[in-house]
Image 1: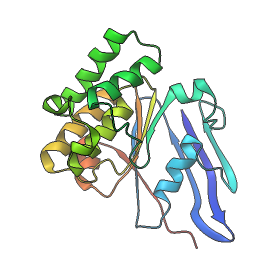
Image 2: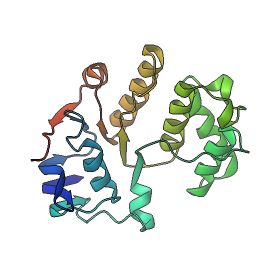
Image 3: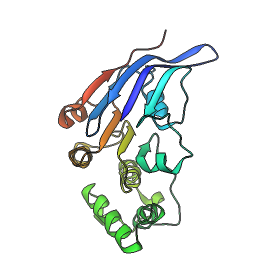
Image 4: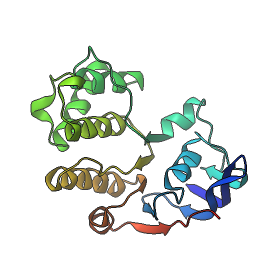
Length: 209
């Protein structure tokens, strides 16, 4: 589903991503690893179309990423940094709104939103507003808003941030279920546990020269 062939990124002669190649199939879980500055986030941005390669190619389902295209956006759900939150909507209302935006009837969208929030251990927080959440809860809220909509590919940048062991375990369970259902998961991480518990294939990135 994802093919990266000797893709690299540089800005004003400064390398952000050394030539990188990888292929990710349906149902695979792939972890991007490497030191800070190796380009893990940049590689994720290439996949979702937030950045274009200076050289090489990136394709998703045989085509270059096109973030303004509805079909591409429907295929790829990404959290690279926390998503924006609506201050005056509760967590459940925001997650429900996302489902409605992607074509679900209101009742189905609310049911799906509640299910994802429950899987992430946030059932008791569904009526909270974003500013009422702790840093770990905010991280889970961002993941919930990313995972609540249908998508064939999930792209996450360090999903383990700000999470304790129990919360990380819930995220692992949700991502494992997504892959078992045929979804593709690609994430950047520094967490050995996340890689091991998900059985992720590792792509090691090196700093650009």
